[in-house]
Length: 64
Image (cartoon, rainbow, N blue to C red; front, side, top):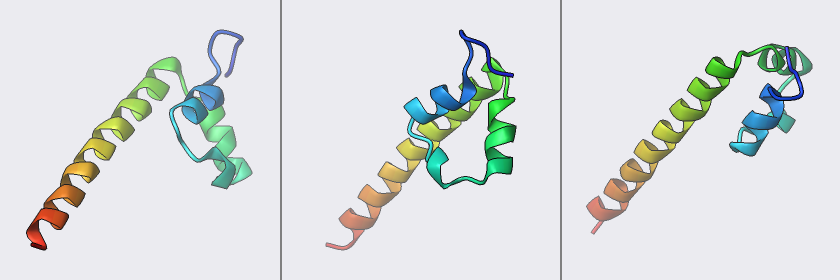
């Protein structure tokens, strides 16, 4: 659960997760994540975003 020093929803929102689009049930699950799980999700998102940027650059480069 969330404590003053560990607020999963705030950490995920600060990392850019679109929490305003999730269901109340999903919000409940995210709110119960451990600090380690939140860190993992944020790291995975950053890695996926980095790959997406590379793929988009390849697609633009390949067009010319």
